[in-house]
Image (tube, rainbow, N blue to C red; front, side, top):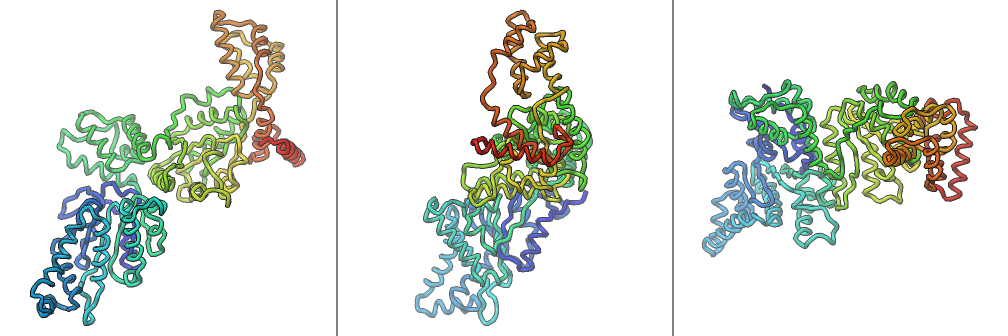
Length: 606
């Protein structure tokens, strides 16, 4: 069983070895486990342990620092090397012996020598719970490292410094929200990473933070700082981990699966290795067969924990196309045209679609049924904006990581006009940046055929033109309109069925059709509910006259002009002639729609 390779490690190594940058930030899946083979033994370890082992080279002195710990040398012998170099640096000598002689020659006996050594050792001890001192000491170590005396560097090796929790040490916050100590740390790092001698030297600093956006912007925006993202584990990595876990388990304690290890690795897409280990340990402890439902539930739980329940939810519609009344032409289009494009891969797939139409037109219900027909994960995007400074970018990056890990996923966005901001100059910077990133994701060729977007809105005109262009959801904009013709007759029969089991005669159908002019799908659903409630009080049945009487008493809300405006916007934005009420509509007909829109806008309808 070969150990999986980690592309991020090679990418980081190329950057540091080439001198392209001396400051690197590792982001993404930093809290996970990574496969490490040492002395013919394989294990999964945290990131810093993995980096320490992978970069433990003779020409490097590896130093690790975390917020609540000391400055730690990966090899203990390196601590003495740095201490000796520090002494020579402070004394300005090329050897320890000469440094000691010079100190003693000052007439202060050993006091100066002791002070230099004690200051260094005390500083190392003092870095515990003192990140400001730690950063300054590390910066001075780099100064010491690249100092030359008589043409020779004080340290033969280069320093490679790993800083865990960099986002906690250098938090991003408005300047007025930072303490003096926070500002001092930011100043230390800004001067350190921008120093031309450091940039052109051989020492390197690797910051570890979940997102570059969490680092203070004065550091995060430095051109000298490059980013390498650690991706979520792919199917091959998860499969290797599952085999490794079972190989380490005694015979009877091996995890029993409903299928193969390959199937388990496929259905655990989106899980970190930590979460996968929890799943396997639970199944091993309970000594029962791990089934697919438990795996799916774990994936859902993990993704929600990463993104937040108020940001995403898993869509599990209880209804299918068979439960959708009317919309015959639309359902045929979805089954024969849209579903195959969603189920395709590569260039045959579609990035997404937008669904528009007036409020109460049945958009969400119809397309939830479409989601039920798809054999893929359906995520409902509820709100990825955060009230906390800088968190919106972090949430987006987590979302992108999850989407990259899933084999196929449909992103369902209801009320999309409120979820997506604009990109104009009058839009807040955070909104503009978020919308730009989402738009770029929609047209990303690497995600084509794996991530699909379904944007549902009654106000299609409020979506930015960048979203509505071809290559994004502009490939297919689908109007969902009020029922007409045979669809309307089907709605009428469905509405009265609970209280009029024999159905409507032709004459009754005509009367009811006249009485319900302007009814939407939601209006019919509301009327059906009213009829059922009244019928329940009358023994379950109503006469046709009672039905007409109830309809006569029913007053529609004063939203006709708004719904007409939204209908016209759906018509003029539709990208398929075959989905229009009249597929043979001429350019003159479309012009009349636009003229009617302008008249409604002149009245203040929007």
